[in-house]
Image (cartoon, rainbow, N blue to C red):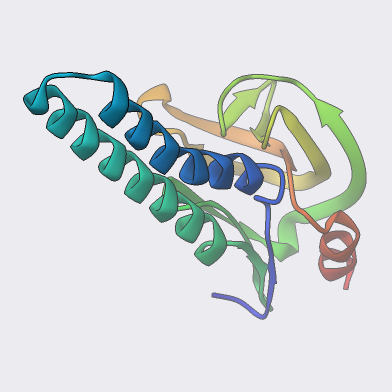
Amino acid sequence: MGDRTFGYSAQVKPFLWVFIVVTPLEVLLVELIVPWFWLRAVLLVFGVVGALLLGWQIWMLSKFKHSVDDEYLWLRYAREFEYRIPLAVIENVTQGTTSRTLHRTRSVVDGTLVLEISGSTNVSLRLSEPQAVDLGRRGAHDVTEVEFWTDDPGGMVRALRK
């Protein structure tokens, strides 16, 4: 997975844990309020499945981190996407928080690949040559800049400047 890994989910994980903790309380409340067994059973199944999905999301965010190896910067978001950027095309790396609030984990805006967490990015890359990025149904784009979030922006910048 690379020589150095960098998390990106420290802002998101607390909210996911809150929902996992609240789910049993919700199931208990449904048991007390809803008089029909069949509806309680259905809502119990939905509650358990929801908690399992939240747990799976937390695990995926912890397992699939950004990483830097000898040749590439790997940018990831759980299993949703993974982009590989050759270190040789990274012209400039800067640290600084920007807020775009695009309401998507990945977007291309004016030739910039934006991978935001909670509406923010904190590391910016300028590339020496365009890189192709496939956004699935939103099409393929050539990008010359990348903005993304990492929990350790200083460490990421140091790793990319070596």
